[in-house]
Amino acid sequence: MLSENIKTIRKSKGLSQQELAIKLNVVRQTVSKWEQGLSVPDSNLLISISEVLETPVSTLLGETVIETEVDNVKAISEKLEVINLQLAQRKTTRRKFVYWLLISLCVVIAAIFVALIVLNSPYFGWDYSSSETAVVGVGFHAFEWLFIRLAPIIFIGAIIGIFLTWKKM
Image 1 (spheres, rainbow, N blue to C red):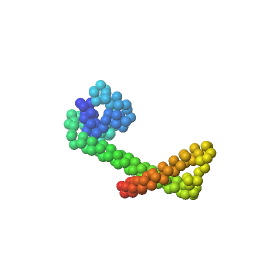
Image 2 (image 1 turned 90 degrees about the vertical axis):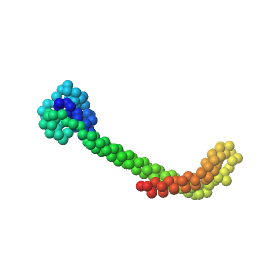
Image 3 (image 1 turned 60 degrees about the vertical axis):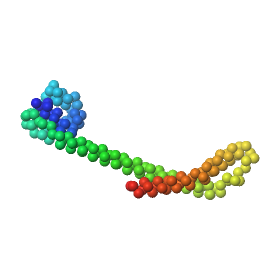
Image 4 (image 1 turned 45 degrees about the vertical axis):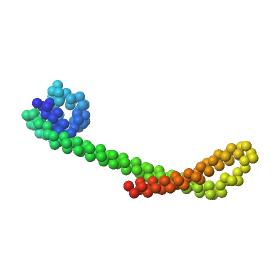
């Protein structure tokens, strides 16, 4: 009777064997043995069990407890609420990360444009007669050509992304 009552009340409270064991400072196997009727908790543990399960000792030792469906639904809904809160927090964190990443991208693009303007862009005045400087010149020319054409598109996309993520925060 005790073993069945511990199991039924534990389940109605939405606790696993592991969770009950942690609250009682015992191992899960001990709880399993109690529920299988292979061992019996001592009087101190019986009092602790009644406190954790919020049930009088007399109920644990008394007649069979009928499992209530309402408690199961309540326990499941409470666990789902915790999961939903964790997912919402994770989504907010991810959105903040994307927001700051897009801002950083805009800053980097603006800084490169400023650097090209300040350097007076040796794009057209590069000396290609020397083979060593010709290779560097071609590499710089390719970077600048690609950057000048793609950066505005990426910059506008990042601004739109910043606006959309900021609006949802």
